[in-house]
Length: 616
Image (cartoon, rainbow, N blue to C red):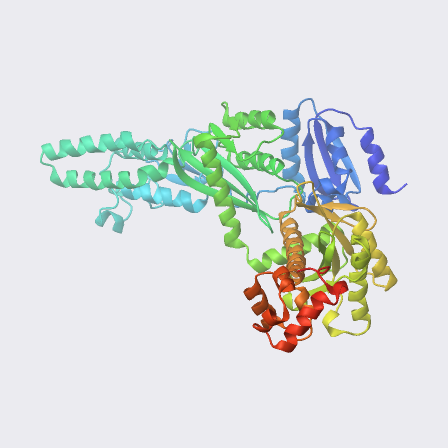
């Protein structure tokens, strides 16, 4: 019994209970960690048909040599354990958000007489105040600098009251940018009041602070303290400028987050839009390149790690698609936030418009990063990976058969190099065996036989052989093609391009009957769909050209001396073949030379076997 068969047998004995499963490779390394509401059902899905999985999942499954499970009491407990184990093992095929940059907080040292500002990684259980999290240390530093400038708070490293009177005031005091507590002329209560205003700004409560400053400015003006009024006026303007911007990082960061996932050809992108009071405040995005998850699984995995790292969750999170574990994830986020968190997948209205906007942003980020060549190379790499080809399929040849009501059967050979059409290598075939009756398999065999014969005879127009042959059709077509390849001793991979009931590309099928679903791999799906459409287009174009030529022809073409010009003149004058048949030699000679008129008359009247039996 092979190792894979052993694993499949073990899966059958798993319990249908919640828990965590841990996939390992031959070296015992953890390559994937997942959670399940029912372990048996979830783990079994990995060992079923490959066509149900995307390329990355198939690659991950091919590396599984062992697995472990941990049964939990609830789905929520499994979710928490899964998150902990992902952080512990950092598996290759899990979504793994990098937290090296962190989401810092601003610490206000309220416990000191002259409070200051610091940037810290996480809040502590002490008497100081913490604000955030911020998207990064730069954003936190910018917030501190802006607020200190607006309220004229100190930015130096001196500690007061210890350093009061030690050294002269710095340049900020002379420029009017600091109230200069270092002079000893600013009591702790007055300075603490300014820091209190700063904390109002950090909380996003700039309107209350604005009213307070405006009132003091009016009082100063009424008391003719114009210098103080000017200072307060400048402070008021600064508060207005930073108020709205600061609200985005106040408290829980936002009251609404919108999460959307978009899968590009080479990578996926998750976008988070942060809203406060209905207004868009900020955007974050994460690019994903190697994950065994897809769709809703990606959103669920991202949700858990993203908010666990940030330690701050809005009241509502909108998702672009459903997740299986929505109740458990909502409970998990509520536990982080310390209050109820709503998860929703809007289908209409304003909220759905926000989802569309987030998706658009995700798609734009991918377009910005991906290059056309990168997309093509990635699609070929994915095609190689999912089909198990030994080499990158740089050169692909695709074949299709086309006929019109069983007549004019033709074949097309289309070539793609590095994911792009190579039209100089296109070839078309007029199928000869079709004269004996319509037979797609025989037609395909004839076309490939003629193509390989050219190659074997050293015809440079048919060399080199491709990385893979693609046949438009199902299992029967690809097996027919494989027989031809075998007869020539060609070991190039061959796949059929199968379609669903709606005539859309469904997947690839190998001669041994294995089907590779491509609908879950956008890059491969787009490539194969483009090749299949181009092959079909080329065949149809050739077929129509032949059919048009036949329909445009006439029995007149069979008469010696009647060329295209004389045929056109006869038809234009008489209007139809029937009228030409009814004309005598004298009437015909008015249009064409007498000798030709005599031949036309004799063709229709003395040679009945040549008459109107042909197409007109």
